[in-house]
Structure formats: C-alpha cells, structure tokens
Image (cartoon, rainbow, N blue to C red):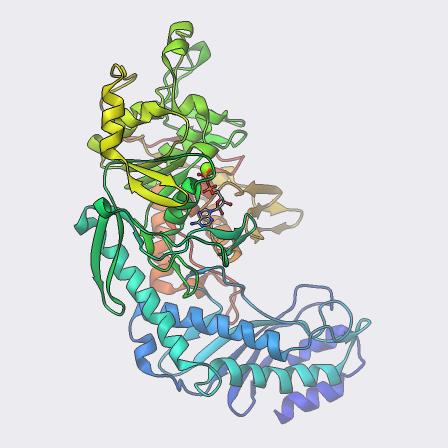
Length: 563
Ligand code: ADP
Ligand code: MG
C-alpha cells in the first residue's frame, strides 16, 4: 500500500503516460490489487485491474461443482456491479476518470471472465478509468478510487459480511434446478418445459427484464401438464412440450411470439426474479428466421430449395445477398450442420413463401424451387429427429402437419389439438410438396485464408457491442442472432474466429467450433486473453452462435466437405 502511495505521489501532475509506473501487484491489506494494463490517455478504454481476496471466506457449498461455481461467480459479478453503483462516484476529471466497471451481465447466467472463484480466493476483474486533470495524472483522485472506493467495493461485494448469503444460495440453487430440469427433458420425451407461474413477457422490446405489474403468469393446460422433482425447489409442475411438431396458434397480440421467445431463451439459465427461471428448452435449440441480405457461403440447401434459375445448384449455394426464403433455408441448414434437435420458427420473422404455398399459387406458378417449410416439418422429425415449434396465426394448413396445437388466448395456453383435428377433417387433405424424407446438409470446409484480419498495420478480431464483430476491415453483422445474450459472448466469438483465421488452416465448420469450445472447456475462457492477467470481458457462447458468426463473414469461402 505504501508503494502504491509513493508511486502516486511521485507521478502527480506528470503527463498521463506516467501512470504506466503503476503496473504491478499491491498488497492492500484484505486483498491484492493487480494493475495489469494501464490506459494510454484518459479517453482511451479504461485500465484493467484485478482484486483478489486473500482467502475464500464463503461456504464451499456455493461453489462445490462447476454448475454452482458458474452460478456463484455470476452472483458475485452482479454483486460487484451493485456495489460499484453505490460506492463509486465516478467522473473525477477528464474522459473516463474515476469510472469503475465490471462486465455487464444480461438476464442469463453464463460462465464469464469477470469473476474467478477458487477454494483459495475470489477474484474480480475490473476496468478503472485512472483519473486525470486534462491530460495529467491526478494522484489525489487516484488514491480515492484505488484506496477508498475499491476496498469498499470488495468489502460489500466479495465478503460474507457484505453480501446476502441467502441470496447467493438462492441464486445457485435456482441455476442448479434449471440445469437439472433441462437435463431431464430428453428422458421425458420433451423439447421444452414452462413452469406454471412463470412470467414470460418482457418490459419492452428493448429490455430483457420482466414485465412488471400487468404480466399474466403462465398457467399450462391440463393436457400438457408435467410434474418434475427438482433438487432444491422440490416438485414443480407446468407445460411440457413433447417432441414432434408443435403449433402455437392464436389471434394477434395474444402472446404467441412471447411464448416462443421464452422457449428460445430457455437454452440458458436465468437469474432469480427473471420470471423464466424454470422455462427451459433443449440446449441446442435454434431460433430460425428469415434474414434477407445476409451472405451465404457454400451451404447445402438442396433439401429445401431445388435448382434455381439458370439451373444453378443449391447443394453448394453461395450468395452475397440472400432472399428471405434462401436465407431462412441457409439458417436451417447451418443449424443442422452443427447439430440440433429443435427448431423454433415464428411467422412474424419468416418469409411467407418459405413457410407455405397455397393451391392457387401452385396452379399459377410451376417454376417454384422451394419446398415450403410446412412440408419439411414432418420429414425433419421422422428422418432427422428434429422437432419444431411453429408460431402461426394466419395459415390453417399447418394444422394438418402438427402433432399438437397450443392455442394462446389472452396469454393463456390451451390444448387445441382435438379441436384442430375436427377442423382439418372438414377440409380435403393437403397434397404435400417436396420429399417425404429429409437428409442432413453436407458439411463444409471453411477457408481460413478467406478471413483477412489486417487493418492498416495491425490485425484485429474483436467484438463491438452485442451485434457486431470487427475482423480486419470487415464488420460482421450479428443483429439477427436472436439467441446471442450479451456482448461478452460476441467478444469471445470474435477472438475464436481470430484464432481460426490466424492458424490459417481450412477445416470443417463443425470441427472448428467444437474444437474451439473444447479448448475453452479445458483451459478456461481466460486462455483467450492475449497476455497474463486481466483477459478482458468474455462470456461463454454456444456452438450455434460461434458458427453463425463464421457463416456471416462476407468474405468467407467454403467448399463441400468430401467423404
Ligand atoms: P402475438 O405474437 O400473439 O401477436 P406477442 O407475443 O407479440 O403476441 O404479445 C403481444 C403483447 O402482449 C406484447 O406486448 C407482449 O409483451 C404482451 N404479453 C405477452 N404475454 C403476456 C402476458 N403473459 N402478460 C402480459 N402481457 C403479455
Ligand atoms: Mg407474434
């Protein structure tokens, strides 16, 4: 502590670069402070520091296995965030002076680099704007931040005296229950489960927090009721969605899309109070949508779309500008390439001509390469074991192909399967188009050399917020990845793509993604940090989002995998 004080005294009022002298490790009594990287000037991205307690004073039950540890780390990250809001004044001069930040978690619980809990210690990774007056060192303000505010944040957020141990336990147990529930799905023949009492609607289109007072809690229909025994909560009942083809029908604004969206987020665990703590889906479920304008590199969409104008093959389909239907087909083929057991499709975000083609249009148009999705859902299930949940308000033909129909009325689901059967029996059966079987798409090799990381004299592969990855001079647009939860995942994906590009080898997409995630599993997310110390703000992505980002690189070149 003395050393930190004297360095600060020595560099006071000198040029901002003098802060570099702070780099190092300091014993601050109750904890160790690591100043890993010092920013160049007050306006640059903040300096990276870590605070590490000298022992782990928490009940070991909170982190006794990997599920609990990730949940507890998530809890402590949020606890640090709250403590910073209370304790840190911020704004102590020019630029980001005096700011203290921790990685910003979304509503889901993820493995992140913001916090490390081991049996020996608890370590938080922070970003600190070292204070400046103009462009000179402000030692007095720096002392306040590093020697008053930081220790108070540690006391409030990282010690049993400062945090509510009951809330920590609830956090860990909630996540454990959700993981257990998700693991149970296959043995119950389910693809998703929504507990009674869940709150599905969100605050707004721009916020993932739960809708307040007016939310109608979920109450599953009797016919689909399933009860399960969870390790902490005990018995829980709710709606089990069985494997096969499930239709969500209902009038406009009755909660169909809200239900589907909750299922798509059910691949992740949620924090207590979110409302979706016990809404789970198969972990590899993929929300599929149309995305016209996206680029596609060598994807086999031939099972869905036949030869295009000019006899162009769709087994190795590339375009810099996909249409609504071809983009949706590519999204499905790419999901199957990585492996999935559940596709989630909403009419709101689908291409109409991909979803359906009616009698009259069949009469008029003969040159139509698309096998509409309505004729693919059954083969997807019986040939490939892939279930679907489709939200449809306007196209009754889907009743013909559904195993189950959930009707949403005033946000309340009912089982309308028998009624749907009655309705369909009144109409002549629909003649299906396309194949009765579905084959998986051919895998692809992607060429690492087609990704150019150069940007001027440097090489870059980094996330820019939630929806953009910067690779050299290219910006990859991830706006339509509806299951990307937070910017830390985007950053991780960017670094993984950077590693793949730098290695320079061409390999199968699935192989690239699996190896990258396996390596994280073995060596930890920290291994993606470029140097020893603070690795930056990373969260664990799913395989599907890593692949989806690779697939959206506009310069990407791919070729069919042989054999
Ligand atoms: P649909 O897809 O059937 O047209 P949405 O799912 O988009 O309907 O929902 C319409 C509106 O109702 C949205 O603003 C949504 O937030 C709200 N909503 C959905 N479910 C509930 C609920 N259970 N309680 C209160 N509001 C809800
Ligand atoms: Mg809708």
